[in-house]
Amino acid sequence: MIPRLLNIAILRASPRTTMSSTPLQRSVRMLQNDFDNGARVLATKAVEALKDIITAEGKTAQTAKQLWDVSRVAGWKLKNARPSMGAAIGSAVTQALQSVKVGWEKEFGSEWMNVVDLELVLKIASKQAQITIEERNGSVKHLANNFVMWLSKKRATITEDRPLRLLTLSSSSSLKACLIKAFLEVPNTRFDLRIIESRPRCEGATFCAALLKELHGIPGIHDRLYVQLASDSSIAMLSRDVDVVLLGADRISGDGDVSNKIGSLAAAACAKAFSPYVEVVVVSESDKIAKPGAMEEHAEEDNDPQELIDVWDPGVKSDQNFLKYCKIRNVYFEWVPNYWLDAYICEKGILSKMDVMEISRQTEAMEKDIFGSLPEIDLR
Image (cartoon, helix red, strand yellow):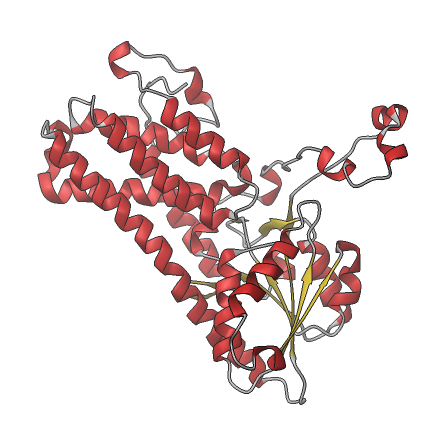
């Protein structure tokens, strides 16, 4: 059975099996404190951190098995460092460990755990982890290709001579790559892109600025692209008459529910209410698909209320009685139930809810294979 979150922190072992925690602690803090990047970027950072930890621990390990045990426990800690993005981080780390294991088995056969040539063991592990990183970086291209194919078909269903109206929120590096490719490659199409600001950190504004910066200088782009940015409370206004709502994903449940930036549910619901032919589409890598489990099992990530308080009137901010008796909620993520969603576009293609369920089961099986019986190693 896989241990519950953070149970490993209380395990004890002899000094010989104790792992130096400094690189791991640094990596865990990095994942916990990075609020600028989405799940895809953090997942890749987690694999890079795992690669560095394996390299560091290979200097003291005596056998491949010792290194494998330490790597798995480190992977488990990285996986659980940021629960709201745990699906993507966990999937990436698990795939990296699976790749390392396959590399060792191919080189050393079934007795790979007993190998003491740590130089070769480390070389293979580093190579396999790097392959995982490169595959992750390349997956965005496949995702963007599939997005352009889907959007081109959507455009063909619109007979009026008008722009294709898109609504999105927050910031997703994957979605940015998809939109740029679409703006350049979907033929004979004008776009009306509407972006929600996404307070309190205003990732939507950051996303908008980054998108326009990358498009700057492309001949004729602003003749075909009209961009609007508005506050979160403008969601109903911006959702009127849209053709597509584009959502990223930090986690996709086995049933196809999607956890994304707060405001995603309002965007989907308002668009469905005001635009009868709208499609709400999830644009995300498949590693966001979590193992089977209901969305209700995942706790909300309540964050520092000061992010909200900072923009208030000074008199309100200094009213201690108000702050004492009013709970300030700063929740970053919320769930969008699967019945609001029409399609899932990922690097594998256009997924149905049944496809999502199958990938979820595969994720669970791989996780059990890698983390099924973790050793007692102190990773504090």
